[in-house]
Structure formats: structure tokens, C-alpha cells
Figure (cartoon, one colour):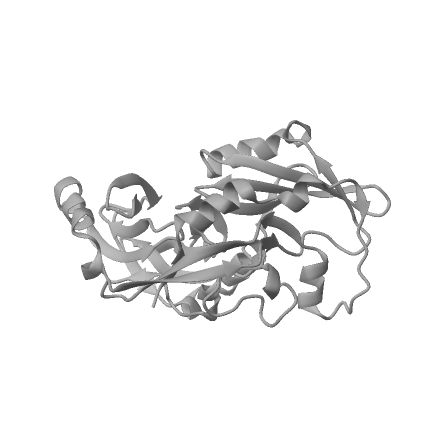
Length: 319
């Protein structure tokens, strides 16, 4: 089964959220909870990025049968944003290191800035920046170091999952964290308009994998002298196409367990609570060149590339 959140929720995330953020002042952050309690830590260091709303969850089988169910969220929060004793200070976009703006423009084209915070130690030393943006109707929270270098994408949780259980619940916004490939769609179940588009514009493409994104758009992974991701609207209209890896042959689908340990470690550290979607081993003339891993981080789909040794090369935000 597959779950994605419809546009009415996305709009709320983009424009009705951040009520808590808008009134933020400089404040001392304290946390008296047990430091072994991961959920308690997450709740104590959370920042709200979307208000409570009633949303529509769409459930889709691989064969394309769709049902919709109304679901009420209790607000969306990014978690583990700072440590006990840190100082959280609201800042403007103009006061952020220039490297942050450069990164956002390169990786989240068309984003809208929402809020930012400077995180300092109790001694007043700048430790990091928390930046909240809206991208394709979705709130995204990112951490940058004191110099403005990207560190990670913060995990998101619904309000009632902040300090309860695994941080998500079945049927919620982040229900795909149960580890099931709920957003995967059989190639045969793609809308006719999408299959026709490939036949007309990229007839040599081999369609390898398809998924439906959080905003009901489609992403299709295909190969033809390289590995590509092509995105379409919910109605099957072309949005964009990006090359994930340039080598012309030798892509092999592999299981998550077959990824090198340093690849798995990077993903876990950089994209907390990410959901694995698909992975490919890339070869050229029979020689291993690297890996491409498709993941969902909160409700944004990304492709992350690594070299043959499992070292990070680049990440591409797909939708």
C-alpha cells in the first residue's frame, strides 16, 4: 500500500504554519529529562514548522487502486534541533552565512524562506544554524554548521508523536517509516500519459522504478546512457528530468543490506529517520563506479550518490 499527503495539507504547511516560530525570542533552552530517553530529547528540542490541520491521506495499491481517508495532524515539528543548555536565537535570512543561501538555491530551487535560528552554546559560541524553508509545499528544516556548511536534514514528527513510541504512527504523515515500500508503484500502473511521454520523448529509456511523492506527483527512475529521474504531475504532465549518474551502462538494483557500511552510516547521520526506497550499483565496462540510493527524507524524495568506496559524492532533491 502507498501513502501520500494531498495538497490541502501541503498548503497549510507552507503558509499557516510557524505560529510558534513567529513569536520566538532569544531563550535559554533547558532539558531536565533522562538523556537516554531519545523521544524525550526530541520533544525538548523540537521546533514547530506546520500547524495542526485536517489532511487527506491517499492509499494506492501497486496496481493503481486509490482510496482517500481524512486524517487530522497535531502540527509538524522538526526535532533534535539543539542540546540542553544551548541558546536559540531567531535571526533573519540576511544575517545567515552566505554559504547557506548558496546551498539552498542549488539544492531547493524555488524554495521559500520561513525562519532561521542561531544556536549557541551556553558560553555564547555559535554552534550551528537551523533554517526552515518551504519547498514544493512541504516544510523542510536543515542544520548548517557555524560557517554555513550543510550538516543534515532534521527529522520531522507530528505533535502527538514527539515523545511517544517510535516517533510516527500508522496512517500518519510519516507512516512510511514502518519500513514498507508504501510509495512504490508498479511500472505497469503508471498513468498512460506518463508511459506515452517516455515512448515519445525517451524511447530508449528502460523504466526501472516508479513512486508517488508526498504531493501526489510521480518520480520515475530510468536508464539510457546513464541513470535518470523524471518527475510528472499527478495528471501525468512532465515537470523535470535530472541525471543521477552519467555512466552509460551497468546499473544493477541492490538491496539496502548490500550497501557499504559507510553509505548506510552517512544516510543515517545526514537524513535522520529516512526511508529507503531503491538502490543501484553503478558499473562501467564491468568495473564498479559507485552507488545511487533513492530515499524519502520526511516527505521529500532525494537521490544520494556515492563513489565505489562508499564516499559521498552528491545528493539531488527530486521532489
